[in-house]
Length: 242
Image 1 (cartoon, rainbow, N blue to C red):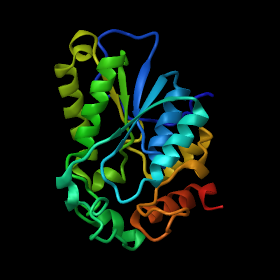
Image 2: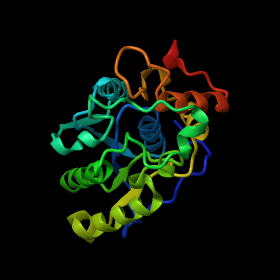
Image 3: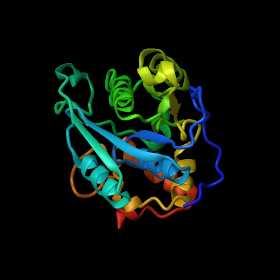
Image 4: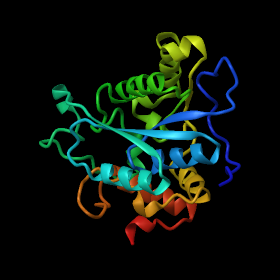
């Protein structure tokens, strides 16, 4: 599988020593973005292991997608189930809060959305750093993108730069050899991500982006609308809707 010629974000921290063998921890939800990151990493020569975390989401549908995709690729997976009772401020966790439903043209105009989960990405990256330091990996790959950092404070380039600095100062691997933190989708919009995914032969039918559970995407939540817009603008068929 050859890597497509699409510009991606530069690493937020560069290893001190060149690596002939690159081993990456990919933060992996089973969604379109993280699946594209996993396929991108494999195409670029990384040996990958994935880290998938459940934290009390309203549904576990995306976890099924993560399992199926990892099995298809024969990639070693790590699943963690954590309980943080104070996360009820997020509509992704609190069953009493409705999921956001906005006209697609307004979604990216809102401030921090109700789907923001306090500290989630910081925690995920810390867990990835712990796993990396334990198994001898040298790279963390995550999937924030231009759509995300318009509203989520923990999806911005500045946030990832800060976390990369912390990991390189607070882990054995970081202080001895250096850790790379990559966000290959950081400056891509959803249509760009779909085009990249299509060029990598990502199995769209196995990915899950919907905020709601069930067997089929709801088509109404903000995530479904952004995904549909991305596929439409990219001129690519979303086989998850078959």
